[in-house]
Image (cartoon, rainbow, N blue to C red; front, side):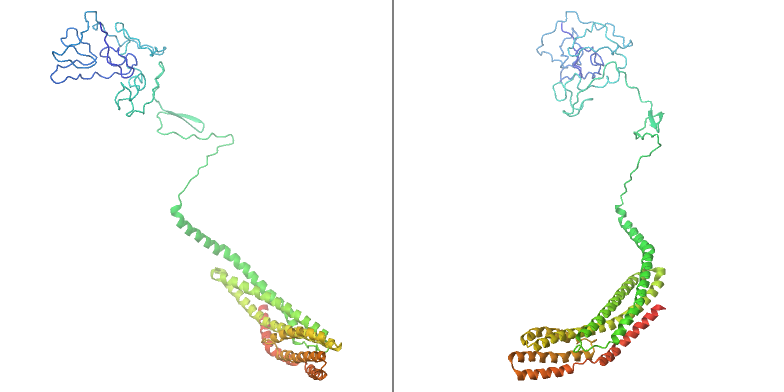
Amino acid sequence: MQAYQSSPCPYCGATWNPPGAQTCANCRNQLPPPGAAYSPPGYAPAQAPGQPQAPDQSQYSDPNQGYAPPPGYPQPAQPDYSQQQPDYSQQQPDYSQQQPDYSQQPPDYGQQAQPNYGQQQPDYGQQPPPGYGAPQPGYGYPAPGQPGAPPPGYPGYPAQPGQYQTYQPPAYGAPAPAPAQGQTITILGQTFTLPFALPFALPALPAIPASGLSLPKVRLRLNLAPLKPLVFILAAIAVVWVFLNAVVPVLATGNLKAADQAISSAVAHQAGIDTVVSQAFAATNKDPMTNLAVAQTAMDARLSSAQTALAQVKADEGAVNSVDQHLALLSPVSGSRSASIAAARQRLHTAAVALQKIDQVLTGFTDQDRQLEQVFASIAVWKAMMDDLAKHDPATALSVYPDAQQKLQAALSSSTGSDIPPASVAYTKNFQVVLDNAQKLAAATQAKDNAAAAKANAAMQAAVRAQGYDGNGALAWNLKLFQPLLDGYHAGIRALKV
């Protein structure tokens, strides 16, 4: 007697499922419906696979192949149906009974025991637990790509081989998850249960410390790239507005104070400048031929005073011109301070003109004193030559002559200035005659040429007698050149004092 075998379960491979069963007796998964049997053209329809062949059928049908051979085809060995067959007419199991308790230890599926279908079967009529109705890939069924595996795309299996994942069956007796009844949320320490589930997850709020609520910092990132030109324009307008309304008034106030200080300093120096100018006009140069030391001392004192006064005047001029330039730049943007700036610039202009005039006067007196000082230095060397000739040392006298000539040439170069009086030019040229004859005298004495020595000495003495400095002529020339400038300086200072 051949035992009945059903079609293999596609999930666990069990072949002892009863005929017409919808779920597998082993893995509880739903069995596929029996497919229509294929019959070639001209042949009698074959019985669907999974149905036992009746003993009295005239043709044999293979339940695993699904078709019947034609008449006259060699028949395979017929099974012996004389033995007792299972009685399928017995009462079918009552599926309304209590479903077995699956919380007990499940049987060991490593060894598949053949069930006895003659005994009472469990009641599977009720709805199987969740998860048993869907196929469980990987549990008792070959992996995709292996022999006996379902084709790609079968429900519950990956469409392509290689995507298979091992299935872990749920534990027997585990309670089914309860359907969602809502969502519980906690806000600021208070718990609320909503009658529905939110479609999104609420962010976790920070706990409230004992010291009080501290809200989280929020950082916003704005894309300001399209607004950069407008931002630059607004920033430029803001800078200009701040400059005009805050910076310019401060600068104007500071420069107005500086203008007053520069003018006050120029007025304060007037007394010292007048003293120096008066000494220069009243100077009577001592004759250096007779008393060189006294003449040089007076010249040095006069030159030092003129240089000091000239330095003060130039400092006042620099301060006045600098402040005037600053106010000229601030005047177009000064707004309400423009009138004050204009008045200050007018006073600065008056001071600048006055200082320029006295600058020319003091510069002229300084140049005159320096030119005469160079002549006095050459006279000093000439006197040393005369001392050497008196000692009958013409060689030493001739050795110092180049020094005297060099100093006199510097004086002659300075005498060409427009502020050097003609008296100083004549005095310098006349001394050149004295120095030349002194050189001739020294050379003749060294050569022991008495006639030439006497001639050179006579010419030298005549030039010395004519060497007087025309002080009156120099004073008249200075008054003519410098007095108008001096008067303009005094007028300007008087205007600034008002």
